[in-house]
Image 1 (cartoon, rainbow, N blue to C red):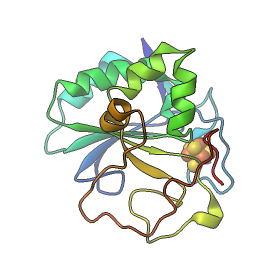
Image 2 (cartoon, rainbow, N blue to C red; image 1 turned 180 degrees about the vertical axis):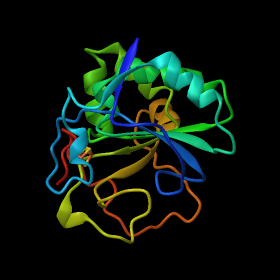
Image 3 (tube, rainbow, N blue to C red; image 1 turned 60 degrees about the vertical axis):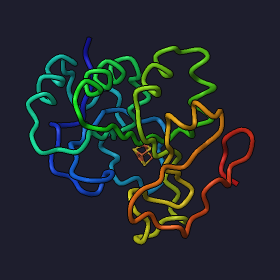
Image 4 (cartoon, rainbow, N blue to C red; image 1 turned 135 degrees about the vertical axis):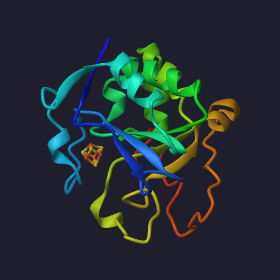
Length: 187
Ligand code: SF4
């Protein structure tokens, strides 16, 4: 199985989740948020196709990384390939973060038609969800671009059937977490 990536894996990131992390930059995003930080990743035909086994081999060779972060682009446009990689990461000691422009609620709804979405979601520890909204942007936000985005403990949220925010060290409290309507749209 192949995955379309925007570029090479990027190790030693300290801004894409807690600790020292390696980022998988997926290619393709249909959200087109105004002032997106990475519009070069929008094109679904851009980047390059890579065999997931090659990505897994690269991950297994990593040293001194606390976790892996799926970013992009939006990884949830390639849930089946991401799920295969995430399951392989589960066999390591590294934790898994994922950034997505979809909300958690939208992903749950989408998963009813596409099993791969739940397959991927179940293998993520922390999900940073929602679109980038420029008017809610602040440089004071940690690990997210705008305050509508939530840093979600996926395991607890799925277990409790409601959104449980992740408890992180140095977690800043000034946010608009939870201000979504029943359709998962920011209000
Ligand atoms: S979801 Fe992320 S990658 Fe996609 S357009 Fe929005 S900010 Fe850019």
